[in-house]
Amino acid sequence: MNERITSVTAYTTLDFVEGAAVGPDWTEAGAGVLNVSVPDDDPERVELQFELDDVDRDRLPLHAERVDLTPEQARAVASDLVREADRIEGGGEDED
Image (tube, rainbow, N blue to C red):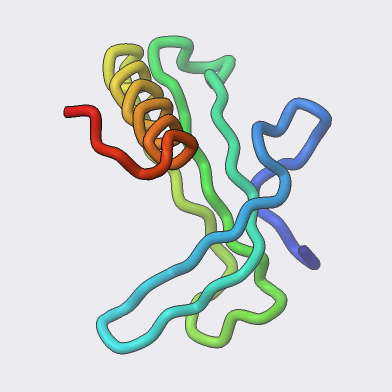
């Protein structure tokens, strides 16, 4: 990434992940950064950040997306991520 809004350090959750921004008639895909943290100034929320690499983007200005989650919401997302990862590793069978 040439310029970046999201800091990438040794503590960054995923400093390289494939992602995409999707519009009504376009998609811009590429590498990005995904991070999960608890901000020092607001320890009541979990912050989920995603930023696409700005090198190959034509439609989007430099920006990052952020979702603020309560601890309960963060656990729900984590649970769904584990369930879906287990489905992939288990051959795609839905256990529900």
